[in-house]
Length: 324
Ligand SMILES: NC(=O)c1ccc[n+]([C@@H]2O[C@H](COP(=O)([O-])OP(=O)(O)OC[C@H]3O[C@@H](n4cnc5c(N)ncnc54)[C@H](O)[C@@H]3O)[C@@H](O)[C@H]2O)c1
Image (cartoon, rainbow, N blue to C red):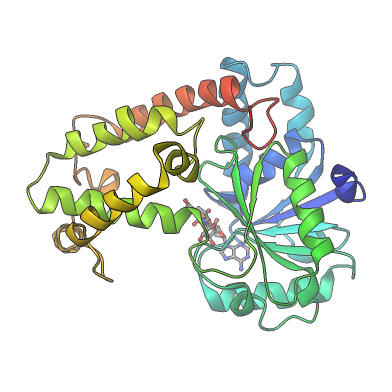
């Protein structure tokens, strides 16, 4: 059985305890694994514990776990500032440090020397290829990408991408491990920068911004088309299911007519680059497509997370791969 393929994994290490890393460590701890969490910044490492506890409290509040489990889960997260000690007995290492190629290559080469030969080394890098990240390691058969979405303790998707030399066994073990953690693994058959999710997202973002930039629709209306149109059906039906049900000949005509009208430029839309140049960076600067000075980002994120947790509980918990 596939789940058994991860049965030998007992100890997990997460390197990088920032935005993604603390949530990834939390997922492993919730699933019952002993996790060593490490970061080069002791402040980030200390803060990770209270971030995880806060996340778990919200999960308890929305009914995703019982309050009594929180101290048990917290006790499984072991902060270890020393990389060697964090990784030495590990079966599976998930790297989630800052997106810096040199730092990642150096880290993987250290991991390759301190970890036992059995250890699988995974990266959460969004933009570097596995061959780049693992350029300096010997165990390329045990190198894999596990690309989580933010926040990883709420969004089930994790993209599993093998490199040219990754063994099939390592792919299957990683898939089984992610399922044990309650994630929904999507397997890429080969290296593809941008994975599946970011390629789909890039196409949608480019067009959404172009619709606003070309004066075709207001910001709120473009977002409403997504939330009230695509959004409600998407948890139950993917794009290719949608195409099949619409009829592929109908979809072909629609694409033939609409594709020449939409943005096919290989660069980011002009409206985006202009906003970035003006320092309008979105939530962090107070202004982007929306005015965030009137709607505090932290309130919005809390409201969003509570609702997505509830949706996940209703739609995903106890469901394999999102199938009905
Ligand atoms: N933020 C996202 O939405 C998102 C989504 C998917 C994947 N990712 C990927 O996840 C990774 C981490 O992103 P993040 O958003 O969590 O970044 P972050 O800046 O919040 O956290 C990165 C952490 O790595 C630590 N770090 C840097 N170099 C280190 C080293 N050599 N050893 C130990 N710790 C080190 C930093 O101190 C920091 O705490 C990146 O590769 C990014 O591409 C991010």
